[in-house]
Amino acid sequence: MSTIVGTNIEVTNIKFDSDTTSMIISNTGQITAQGEGTATTNLQQGLAKVFCHWNSTSTISNGFNVSSIDDDGTGDWDLNFTNNFSNSESIATAMPDNSFQSSNMCFNTTTGATTSDITVYGVITTGANKDVGTHVAIHGDLA
Image (cartoon, rainbow, N blue to C red; front, side, top):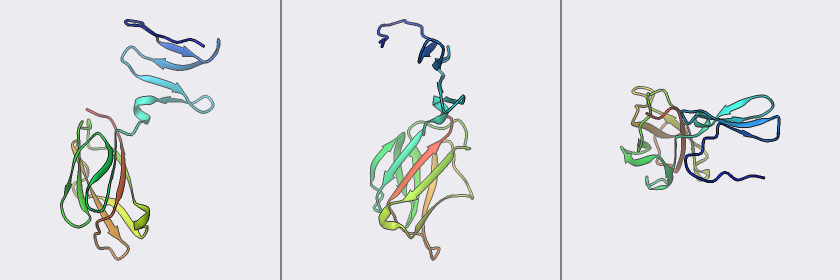
């Protein structure tokens, strides 16, 4: 096994064995890793650029790339990003905490996400908004 240590070292390929490249680092810093079978994965594209958990009182308990959360009313939050996305076409997923299993999470389809924030709603089965603990992950390209 080898360890690479130092400054100004140029490495473009890291090999698993003498014939298999397991990771490639481009001259722009893009990292491509060997995936399943013959597939490769672009590391930057595969990472969540935002994740956050907040409780029913809108207190963030864990997050990454989140500057703040705005409580805009019952079951209505704006999640503000520390680093903006390059466009508003990010992909967001959300789910309620286990204690709110009869709730659904949805995103504002009228204005959609912007490059700097996204609106999230907690909705119970009757269609009314509800303050619920929430988990969100967002993928896309940062600006």
